Length: 85
Image 1: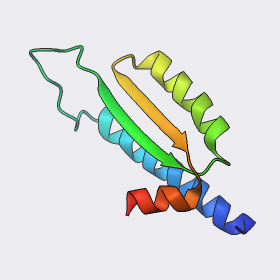
Image 2: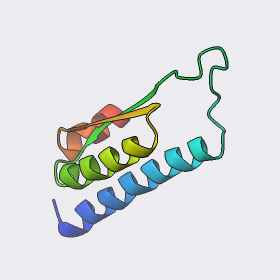
Image 3: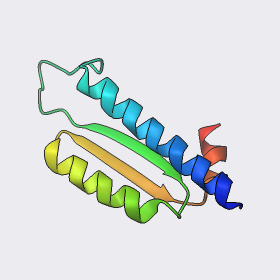
């Protein structure tokens, strides 16, 4: 994989994470009012190159938002793309 392709994948992952966080932050994700401690789980997979940094960001994010669980599996960018599409 070329350096440019890895960079583009990294940018795409960051954009996706930012979009999910923005949607959640704007309140567009509805919460169950009967059970306010319902946990939202987001699962993703993809490049192993980004995994250490993503895991660090995920841990910091989940410290702030205990009702959101983010799971990421580093399975390789090709496998991640296949799962996405």
